[in-house]
Image 1 (tube, rainbow, N blue to C red):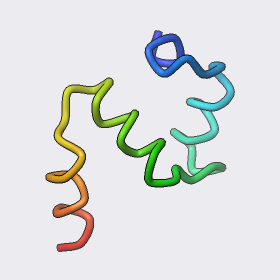
Image 2 (image 1 turned 90 degrees about the vertical axis):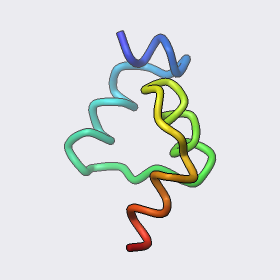
Image 3 (image 1 turned 30 degrees about the horizontal axis):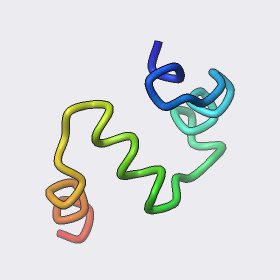
Image 4 (image 1 turned 180 degrees about the vertical axis):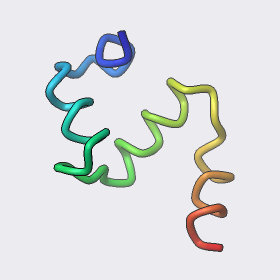
Length: 48
């Protein structure tokens, strides 16, 4: 379960997935690392 990888409850992940909660920069890095993505590359994508 992804929440376990983040050490966060399922509600944290669920609210983020449906857009009820936004990630701060640190949380974004946690998400990327848990998913095997480079957070810098992710930010480059967001910044266009």
